[in-house]
Length: 446
Image (tube, rainbow, N blue to C red):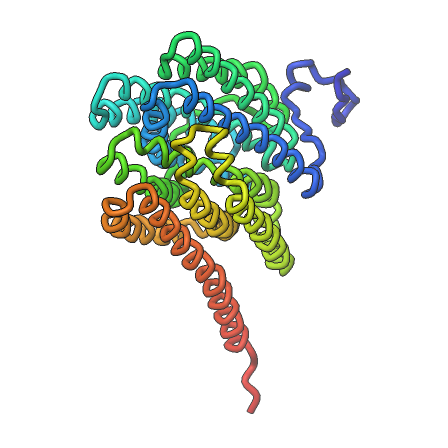
């Protein structure tokens, strides 16, 4: 039924197409419900990704895990740069400086460039045709995920994470099913990934696009000046995110250079444990970032109490992960993957410590994003890249997989320290400057 609209003379009824364009977003869910939905979706999605690695380890060729890891190590920094960090930017845009259609249009413009760039880099760096094909297929999967990620921004800012949680679960299950079936029937990883990208695109068209349209207009806006202004505003954060993606992939680059793609596959299995902490951490921070941005915009002191509660919860949960790796790590690697993977128990325990530090660093970094300190994040991540490259050049040639894990631990420790320092120093300086301005405006008593 159409909604009546008041007119100066009489009440008239909107045509159906006008009523459809009048968007009334559902009420936001509570932080607890948003966290539960996001956690559920991320758990299913991460579990399916883990299942994909297990299928590759047990039924794929020895080099398949390494090829996939190399493809992701190339694709992640490229997409981090050209995605322009638009989803977090839209969620944190509490002043509505830009419209959702402008964010979406900019993503549509940069997406083909990102896919083509990964294809070209893979063609230059890969040593054989099979690896080049896998890297190209990874770029297609990542491209579809990038489009879905931007569509998720609309319900994300509306604090309706149930929409995203369900979509993540569907994507994970569909990807695992397609990759598993095609890999077992064809033994061709590139073909399996292309099939997964096609299935994910179907889900985007059938589900994600209509869902996003209930929260915001999705009609592209090709007006150049606001798109250029948006890209310019988001570029520092995008470069910062790219530097971070480069930093966390430095161990993979160094390992494949010194030891080959097959050993990179063992590192990828160990590093996949980080998905456990990332799953919970992403669920919590994606649920909270809009709330943090709103609290920061209103200058509410509740921002700091919420941040402390989130950090304490994340630290406790990841400490349990370290204990689980100590007690169950060896049988998990042996039976979930192969006996050869079971020999990396020490590295697994070490990577669980990395997960603890990384999760705390991500909480602090996402808070900086909510506060829109984009240029400071760029400086932090630039320092991390330079430090990580230096550490990797010393540790990885000597200790291989263990050296790669130690390099990653060093990177996240530095990231945690720098983000924490910014969160302490910047508000303190602004408060001091505000007090000084107030003192200057006081009348002088003689």
